[in-house]
Length: 126
Image (cartoon, rainbow, N blue to C red; front, side):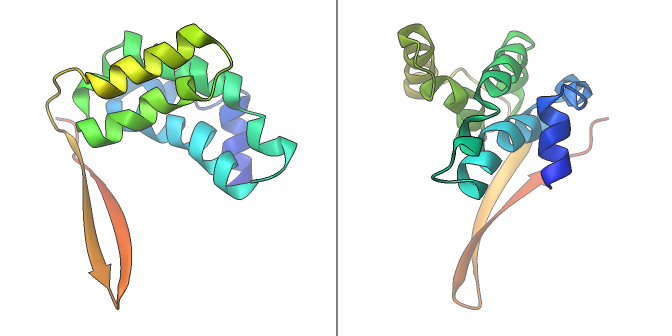
């Protein structure tokens, strides 16, 4: 996964922005992965700028409208981490008043052996 995150920071995975599922995956890889894998270190911030850039491109392309609202929040989250007030306001606005979307990517939660897990299922484009 480390090489995937590094490739994403170097823009080698920007082609993923061509689909809603890819854009969501790229936002997760650039924003959530480092925050959880490198918590408490400077590395957790390394891809913040790239995450905002990818999120902006995804929104401009309407990718956030193609996924379930609950998952679209992960596209808006990189703006919440910014030190820019305009970015933070953008995140809050999109999160509080999410645009209408047609669910194509859905999330389901289930208990497995007493543990809770979330599965993200991607529908095939076609």
